[in-house]
Image 1 (cartoon, rainbow, N blue to C red):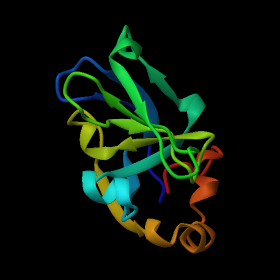
Image 2 (cartoon, rainbow, N blue to C red):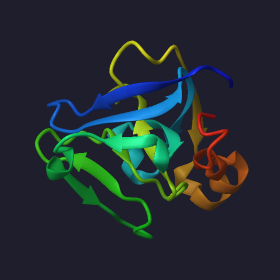
Image 3 (cartoon, rainbow, N blue to C red):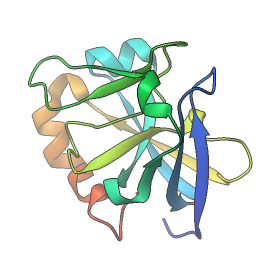
Length: 140
């Protein structure tokens, strides 16, 4: 999916965690049914880590939860509890941005695809999600 790359700003509900990310205006977001994403109803798009910047003193308001393989780093705000981004197992070299946490006005289109996190290994192999943090194709 081709579209213009822009700077998106976003963060958590209480605005203690703020970030900016470079990504297309039209994105593919992943709806995952693993135990964590399913319970949080997290739908996210993936970008290379170098396109993500945590702003100001946001770091002091973050905490991290891990489980299973401990590869994914599920970050969330200590104040409001919102996971506006995290470091996914599928793309440890990337950042998963919760698309609903992007400030209004810069996303023009969101296509939602399913990721079968309950059958993680087979879904990871079938979807090609690992390539999304490698740069050029990072929005799809």
